[in-house]
Image (cartoon, rainbow, N blue to C red; front, side, top):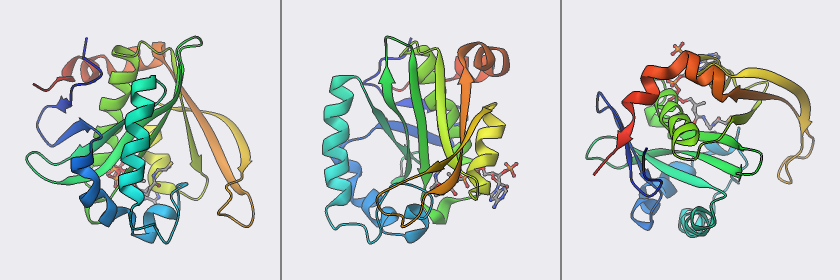
Length: 196
Ligand SMILES: CC(C)(COP(=O)(O)OP(=O)(O)OC[C@H]1O[C@@H](n2cnc3c(N)ncnc32)[C@H](O)[C@@H]1OP(=O)(O)O)[C@@H](O)C(=O)NCCC(=O)NCCS
């Protein structure tokens, strides 16, 4: 079982997931300043100059508390290109919520799908969760496709309200059970191993 404090690698070595750390802040800050990330996520735009630094600090304490696990998605030997995460971890009910974003220069290469797969393997394997939720704007075609490729099933339609939006936006809730994951992704889960 992977140690929650160790990076995860997904062979072939296209990406590497590293527990989010201050060393990632600078590269992620530049990518998070792109309005394309804020457009479909709760991140604000304009992004504050110390936004990534603050996010890393908050994520480090939430990881220690066992409620949120954020990974920097890195190209092998390279800078971070995005994040994937499990948040709102509820060990009593065995649930958590998947999140991810990839910097715009790196879209369309399968990185979000691979990063999310590794994060799900971590959530079902290392965290032993039973159900993973996800929320996506109806208008976010790329992310809907990522969730479909991962085997997520629609659970509800609702209007999502964020303080930064003047009006709530049509959104879709998804769920992936441990059983569905095991049936569909056994090989992927086995392939994810701690990186030493
Ligand atoms: C959504 C996002 C994570 C996708 O990242 P990515 O690395 O490009 O994703 P992948 O390459 O793994 O897969 C994208 C899939 O969506 C498809 N796609 C891209 N744009 C699409 C669109 N507008 N409509 C439908 N499908 C689309 C791609 O063709 C690909 O599917 P395929 O593998 O069957 O060809 C990225 O665009 C992003 O970070 N957006 C901003 C933040 C965000 O929306 N995060 C998710 C919040 S729910």
